[in-house]
Amino acid sequence: MSSQGPKTWFSIINESVHTVDDVDIGDIEALSKNFVVVKRGFINVHYYYIPVNRVEGWDGSVLWLKSTESQVMENYERNVEPDPFIYYVKEHKEFFYALFPSSNPSKRIKTSNQRTARRCCSSPIQVSPM
Image (tube, rainbow, N blue to C red):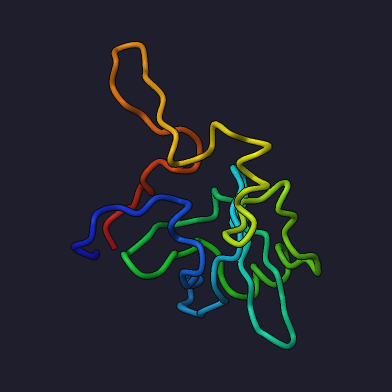
């Protein structure tokens, strides 16, 4: 595990994603509450909409999945770019924040005991030691 502090979900856009069989299937293109969208390729582009519950953890440089490459290709591939009105896409984050202002990681809320907390996807990624 990296000596860096924990990253937030928003900050892992463009980071590498590997399957349980150690295959690099691409980079994170977009996020939502329920999915991580991975983009593979530049000319022949593939998008994988992977449920968040299929994420094993973050080791400081790679997001690891609980699925094999073949499972990802069979179950999660779609031929559609992520919609910036539904998914957090770094290049179009203003659309996402306009629809879901409480998801903005720069906005903080006070909890009942006056602690500062962050909402939605900006919480630190929970990682099991690898």
